Amino acid sequence: MMARKRKRRRLEKVINSAREKEQSTSPNLTKYWLQRYDLFSRYDEGIKMDEEGWYSVTPEEIAVKQAERCRGKVVIDCFSGVGGNTIQFAKVCSSVIAIDIDPVKVEMAINNAMVYGVDDDRVDYVVGDFIHLAPSLKGDVLFLSPPWGGPMYNKVESYTLDMLQPKDGYSLFQIAQSITPNIIMFLPRNVDLAQLEELAWLSSPPLTLEIEENCVGGKIKAITAYFSCSEV
Figure 1: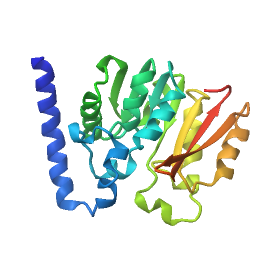
Figure 2: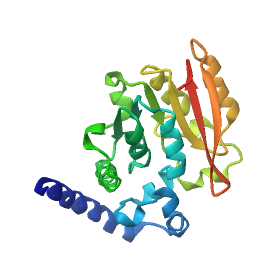
Figure 3: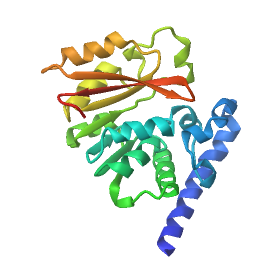
Figure 4: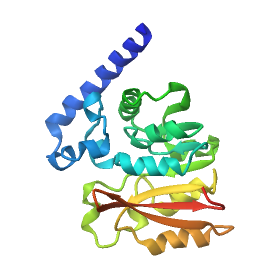
């Protein structure tokens, strides 16, 4: 019990430092604040997010559905951020590898998983670059939710895969395929669907593609693309 308290105090010290910096530099996040319970239903119980986390985390209702498709599998969450998807994967999957290049985000993800009572043994948190780590990774399903380039992504008529960060979507998909053909991509609602179809049929062998519109409160928030050799 004492060790757990020390761990939480350490997390709070790191996260509070990041939050103080955010409050002094961040633009108005009111839009996302009003959606906080869509992002984390247990927000008031100690959830921590940085500025990027507010507009990047997968809404909980969507993350639950994505995780259900991976039940019992080993999942690699390649851009895990503040842990929205990692939490839901950990509830139903055999294990999760949660990777993020930002150590503060990883600390926040650990904190948020504790809020949801996630078993520490179900998740391996890794501070690192997925692109560099890929050759050493093994898993059944790979979840790709790379940065979309900030909240301005919805200002373009058609969002193309080259707009993804830190590499274009074609490169990221190729890296993912070196690990597993079972790939889930979480993308903007205005993504170019023809490009997703191209990813599937250009693969060798061609992959099955299922595209799902993700809605919260009756509004389309994003697109999830499920690629597989067989149903994930």
